[in-house]
Image (cartoon, rainbow, N blue to C red):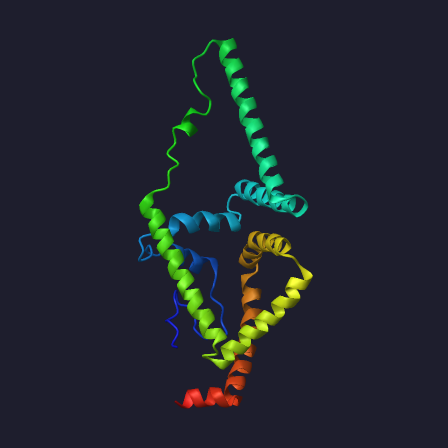
Length: 235
Protein backbone atom coordinates (compact mmCIF):
# COMPACT_ATOMS: atom_id res chain seq x y z
CA UNK A 1 0.00 0.00 0.00
CA UNK A 2 1.44 3.31 -0.99
CA UNK A 3 1.36 5.99 1.68
CA UNK A 4 -0.11 9.38 1.02
CA UNK A 5 2.08 12.34 0.20
CA UNK A 6 3.56 14.13 3.21
CA UNK A 7 1.66 17.12 4.46
CA UNK A 8 3.07 20.50 5.43
CA UNK A 9 6.51 19.98 3.90
CA UNK A 10 7.53 17.16 6.27
CA UNK A 11 9.97 14.60 4.89
CA UNK A 12 8.46 11.18 4.30
CA UNK A 13 11.53 9.22 5.37
CA UNK A 14 12.56 11.51 8.20
CA UNK A 15 15.61 13.34 6.92
CA UNK A 16 18.50 14.45 9.00
CA UNK A 17 17.24 17.99 9.47
CA UNK A 18 14.39 18.91 11.77
CA UNK A 19 12.40 21.98 10.75
CA UNK A 20 9.46 21.75 13.16
CA UNK A 21 9.93 25.16 14.72
CA UNK A 22 7.19 27.35 16.03
CA UNK A 23 7.07 29.40 12.84
CA UNK A 24 6.22 26.32 10.78
CA UNK A 25 3.61 25.38 13.37
CA UNK A 26 2.03 28.80 13.04
CA UNK A 27 2.10 28.53 9.25
CA UNK A 28 0.31 25.19 9.34
CA UNK A 29 -2.23 26.53 11.81
CA UNK A 30 -2.95 29.54 9.59
CA UNK A 31 -3.61 27.30 6.60
CA UNK A 32 -7.06 27.07 5.02
CA UNK A 33 -9.83 25.14 6.79
CA UNK A 34 -10.14 21.42 6.14
CA UNK A 35 -12.25 20.03 3.33
CA UNK A 36 -14.96 19.18 5.84
CA UNK A 37 -15.49 22.88 6.52
CA UNK A 38 -14.12 22.99 10.09
CA UNK A 39 -11.84 25.94 10.74
CA UNK A 40 -9.05 24.37 12.77
CA UNK A 41 -7.50 27.76 13.49
CA UNK A 42 -10.19 28.62 16.03
CA UNK A 43 -9.35 25.40 17.90
CA UNK A 44 -5.59 25.08 17.50
CA UNK A 45 -4.52 28.69 18.02
CA UNK A 46 -5.77 28.90 21.64
CA UNK A 47 -4.21 25.51 22.41
CA UNK A 48 -0.86 26.63 20.98
CA UNK A 49 -0.99 29.79 23.07
CA UNK A 50 -1.68 27.69 26.16
CA UNK A 51 1.10 25.12 25.79
CA UNK A 52 3.66 27.79 24.83
CA UNK A 53 2.71 29.89 27.90
CA UNK A 54 1.93 33.04 25.87
CA UNK A 55 -0.32 34.16 28.73
CA UNK A 56 1.33 32.87 31.90
CA UNK A 57 -1.67 33.56 34.13
CA UNK A 58 -4.16 31.84 31.83
CA UNK A 59 -1.93 28.83 31.20
CA UNK A 60 -1.17 28.55 34.91
CA UNK A 61 -4.87 28.41 35.75
CA UNK A 62 -5.59 25.77 33.09
CA UNK A 63 -2.53 23.67 33.93
CA UNK A 64 -3.16 23.91 37.67
CA UNK A 65 -6.82 22.99 37.29
CA UNK A 66 -6.03 19.94 35.17
CA UNK A 67 -3.35 18.77 37.58
CA UNK A 68 -5.63 19.19 40.60
CA UNK A 69 -8.32 17.08 38.92
CA UNK A 70 -5.86 14.37 37.85
CA UNK A 71 -4.19 14.20 41.26
CA UNK A 72 -7.63 14.03 42.88
CA UNK A 73 -8.49 11.09 40.65
CA UNK A 74 -5.34 9.35 41.90
CA UNK A 75 -6.75 9.28 45.45
CA UNK A 76 -10.50 9.47 44.94
CA UNK A 77 -13.00 7.84 42.63
CA UNK A 78 -14.31 9.63 39.56
CA UNK A 79 -17.74 9.97 41.15
CA UNK A 80 -16.23 11.58 44.26
CA UNK A 81 -14.15 14.03 42.24
CA UNK A 82 -17.14 15.05 40.11
CA UNK A 83 -19.37 15.37 43.18
CA UNK A 84 -16.90 17.44 45.23
CA UNK A 85 -16.05 19.68 42.27
CA UNK A 86 -19.72 20.27 41.51
CA UNK A 87 -20.48 20.97 45.19
CA UNK A 88 -17.64 23.50 45.36
CA UNK A 89 -18.89 25.23 42.22
CA UNK A 90 -22.50 25.21 43.45
CA UNK A 91 -21.48 26.57 46.86
CA UNK A 92 -19.60 29.40 45.19
CA UNK A 93 -22.47 30.39 42.92
CA UNK A 94 -25.05 30.22 45.74
CA UNK A 95 -22.84 32.30 48.04
CA UNK A 96 -22.28 34.88 45.31
CA UNK A 97 -26.01 35.00 44.48
CA UNK A 98 -26.98 35.53 48.15
CA UNK A 99 -24.27 38.18 48.58
CA UNK A 100 -25.47 40.11 45.52
CA UNK A 101 -29.09 39.92 46.71
CA UNK A 102 -28.11 41.31 50.10
CA UNK A 103 -26.09 44.13 48.51
CA UNK A 104 -29.00 44.99 46.20
CA UNK A 105 -31.36 45.09 49.20
CA UNK A 106 -29.00 47.31 51.21
CA UNK A 107 -28.23 49.65 48.31
CA UNK A 108 -31.81 49.45 46.99
CA UNK A 109 -30.55 48.82 43.47
CA UNK A 110 -32.16 46.88 40.63
CA UNK A 111 -29.16 45.12 39.10
CA UNK A 112 -31.10 41.94 38.50
CA UNK A 113 -29.73 38.40 38.48
CA UNK A 114 -25.90 38.36 38.91
CA UNK A 115 -25.54 35.59 36.33
CA UNK A 116 -27.99 37.07 33.84
CA UNK A 117 -25.43 37.39 31.03
CA UNK A 118 -24.32 33.78 31.40
CA UNK A 119 -27.90 32.49 31.63
CA UNK A 120 -28.83 34.29 28.40
CA UNK A 121 -25.72 33.03 26.60
CA UNK A 122 -26.41 30.55 23.79
CA UNK A 123 -24.70 27.29 24.78
CA UNK A 124 -26.36 25.04 22.19
CA UNK A 125 -23.98 23.19 19.90
CA UNK A 126 -24.51 24.04 16.20
CA UNK A 127 -25.78 20.94 14.46
CA UNK A 128 -23.78 21.54 11.28
CA UNK A 129 -20.51 21.78 13.23
CA UNK A 130 -21.36 18.63 15.18
CA UNK A 131 -21.96 16.73 11.93
CA UNK A 132 -18.71 18.03 10.46
CA UNK A 133 -16.75 17.04 13.56
CA UNK A 134 -18.36 13.61 13.50
CA UNK A 135 -17.32 13.13 9.87
CA UNK A 136 -13.72 14.03 10.75
CA UNK A 137 -13.71 11.58 13.67
CA UNK A 138 -15.17 8.79 11.52
CA UNK A 139 -12.53 9.34 8.84
CA UNK A 140 -9.80 9.25 11.46
CA UNK A 141 -11.18 6.00 12.91
CA UNK A 142 -11.35 4.42 9.45
CA UNK A 143 -7.76 5.49 8.76
CA UNK A 144 -6.59 4.03 12.06
CA UNK A 145 -8.38 0.73 11.46
CA UNK A 146 -6.86 0.49 7.99
CA UNK A 147 -3.36 1.11 9.37
CA UNK A 148 -3.81 -1.45 12.14
CA UNK A 149 -5.05 -4.00 9.63
CA UNK A 150 -1.97 -3.36 7.51
CA UNK A 151 0.34 -3.81 10.50
CA UNK A 152 -1.30 -6.90 12.01
CA UNK A 153 -1.63 -8.67 8.65
CA UNK A 154 2.04 -7.94 7.81
CA UNK A 155 1.61 -6.07 4.55
CA UNK A 156 5.09 -4.65 5.16
CA UNK A 157 7.33 -6.88 7.28
CA UNK A 158 9.59 -4.08 8.54
CA UNK A 159 6.66 -1.90 9.62
CA UNK A 160 5.04 -4.84 11.40
CA UNK A 161 8.30 -5.66 13.20
CA UNK A 162 8.65 -2.04 14.33
CA UNK A 163 5.05 -2.14 15.51
CA UNK A 164 5.78 -5.32 17.45
CA UNK A 165 8.78 -3.68 19.11
CA UNK A 166 6.58 -0.76 20.10
CA UNK A 167 4.02 -3.10 21.64
CA UNK A 168 6.78 -4.93 23.48
CA UNK A 169 8.04 -1.66 24.95
CA UNK A 170 4.49 -0.76 25.98
CA UNK A 171 4.30 -3.96 28.07
CA UNK A 172 7.17 -2.67 30.20
CA UNK A 173 5.63 0.79 30.31
CA UNK A 174 2.36 -0.69 31.54
CA UNK A 175 4.21 -2.63 34.24
CA UNK A 176 5.87 0.56 35.52
CA UNK A 177 2.96 3.01 35.34
CA UNK A 178 -0.82 2.87 35.40
CA UNK A 179 -3.00 4.74 32.96
CA UNK A 180 -3.62 7.75 35.19
CA UNK A 181 0.09 8.20 35.88
CA UNK A 182 0.76 8.21 32.14
CA UNK A 183 -1.95 10.84 31.65
CA UNK A 184 -0.37 13.04 34.35
CA UNK A 185 3.08 12.66 32.76
CA UNK A 186 1.59 13.45 29.34
CA UNK A 187 -0.03 16.65 30.65
CA UNK A 188 3.22 17.76 32.30
CA UNK A 189 5.12 17.03 29.08
CA UNK A 190 2.53 18.88 26.99
CA UNK A 191 2.91 22.04 29.06
CA UNK A 192 6.71 21.86 29.41
CA UNK A 193 8.41 20.22 26.41
CA UNK A 194 7.14 22.66 23.72
CA UNK A 195 8.44 25.62 25.71
CA UNK A 196 11.77 23.89 26.35
CA UNK A 197 12.09 23.09 22.64
CA UNK A 198 11.26 26.68 21.70
CA UNK A 199 14.04 27.99 23.94
CA UNK A 200 16.64 25.37 22.91
CA UNK A 201 15.61 24.63 19.34
CA UNK A 202 19.05 24.71 17.68
CA UNK A 203 20.68 22.25 20.07
CA UNK A 204 17.71 19.87 20.10
CA UNK A 205 17.45 19.89 16.29
CA UNK A 206 21.11 19.01 15.99
CA UNK A 207 20.93 15.95 18.24
CA UNK A 208 17.56 14.77 16.93
CA UNK A 209 18.87 15.04 13.37
CA UNK A 210 21.86 12.83 14.22
CA UNK A 211 19.63 10.23 15.86
CA UNK A 212 17.21 10.16 12.94
CA UNK A 213 20.07 9.74 10.48
CA UNK A 214 21.41 6.75 12.40
CA UNK A 215 17.94 5.19 12.65
CA UNK A 216 17.32 5.63 8.91
CA UNK A 217 20.68 4.02 8.11
CA UNK A 218 19.92 1.05 10.33
CA UNK A 219 16.42 0.58 8.87
CA UNK A 220 17.84 0.75 5.32
CA UNK A 221 20.34 -1.99 6.17
CA UNK A 222 17.61 -4.12 7.76
CA UNK A 223 15.34 -3.77 4.72
CA UNK A 224 18.21 -4.65 2.40
CA UNK A 225 19.09 -7.75 4.47
CA UNK A 226 15.54 -9.10 4.62
CA UNK A 227 14.67 -11.44 1.71
CA UNK A 228 11.03 -10.35 1.73
CA UNK A 229 11.97 -6.69 1.65
CA UNK A 230 14.39 -7.24 -1.23
CA UNK A 231 11.79 -9.18 -3.19
CA UNK A 232 9.13 -6.48 -2.78
CA UNK A 233 11.64 -3.79 -3.80
CA UNK A 234 12.58 -5.74 -6.92
CA UNK A 235 8.93 -6.04 -7.91
